[in-house]
Length: 352
Image 1 (spheres, helix red, strand yellow):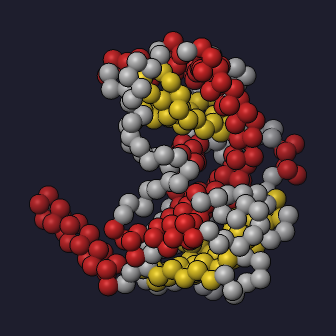
Image 2: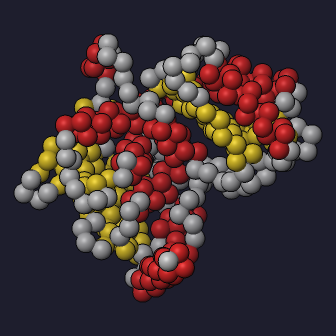
Image 3: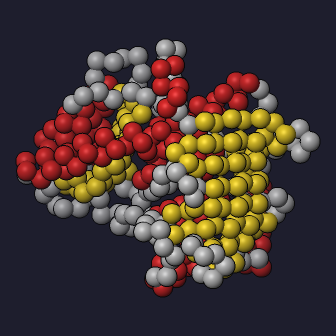
């Protein structure tokens, strides 16, 4: 039975590869169609997570998505994005345009969907993932532990939200300058950092994971904070109601979709944050309209769960709202975290 199951899965994989070869993604980049933006159109066979892959590529290249139209009914996926560079100008850099074409076009069929242009693609370091309660002095304590264990921090991203904290740190062994491979040292790092993260709060857990693989840091931070349930708010948290994004979820019974509408202050990577969360919650975006040309961004998603159903209950509706609010707020909270993160790297450099 197990052999037959493996054979069936292998056949499904081969069929999917064949289908992609016969129907490769098509990317069209147009700098003439719009007066103030570059228009990127992506057509490809549809699969769950494809939208996130496309948005992730554009976001990692530091492009600003000002408008987007998404449609993925049936087996085909079609996206149209209006993008600019960081200065609000059309994208004319041939190197960037070439990366877009290769990453989203035919060559993307034969490469991994996990890619990042923001960090060096290397496995000569050890990745440490941390989640736990946020409190003053936390990063200083983490810094002290890593310094004591003779670890160099190459890169670190720290997000805080709703009294929870998550971090992805890329470290090397001070003595070898490469990834940490000593199992005893790795175990000691996990033990001491987990103790720091727990602190005196025993009501909610802390977690430390050590790996040597390449990861997309911002995607992992979303996944880590989602798994840590940072979207759960205290019952007395009504004071910040006016500061939250405006998120609504209604069912469109005629078409059997659920419609999510989001209005919030616009900022870089907003679309990535919301699409990342919908994907991790296992919702499929069938249609979407995005408008972020002004100070306020408007996002509208027509979704179903991966099982084909719209939102079934009030509890599910509230959970979607809370998770999307958290996804938008995390990166805003990151501002203070990043400042401390810079101090953390500075402290480590001085102590070595």
